Image (spheres, rainbow, N blue to C red):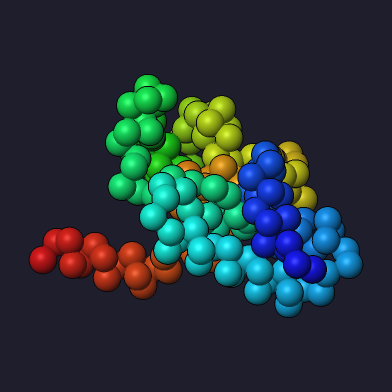
Length: 178
């Protein structure tokens, strides 16, 4: 297909959420998967090497348009966007517990943190960084929590597996304390 890159370009542009490779395959049913992957790689490389302010990045399991970092202060001023709303240390601790132990219940999170996590869970649900994914097959059938796609995008992760491992975190903390 001669205009495959342009079609993918248009699909990423118009998509409301990060456009996944699977969704591209659903739309481009007559195009072999390796051709889609090749065109996508070329498109990403073209935007990255161009002099323009726009690039295509992979986030939350899909592809989106983004401004290059050099233009961030100007875009923020124009749109009068505040810096990312900072989460409290309690909310970050709770979010970490969910991210590393998901799916997890409120009582399990509270046990990990050694404090009640009700308010922090409520905050994270409001911010759509976590979601309820069902109930645990245990007495009382407590709710189970898991991180969302918004969590991945907020922290610039492509997948939950991109979180640093426990060993990496320990090493970072040791370096910071040195």
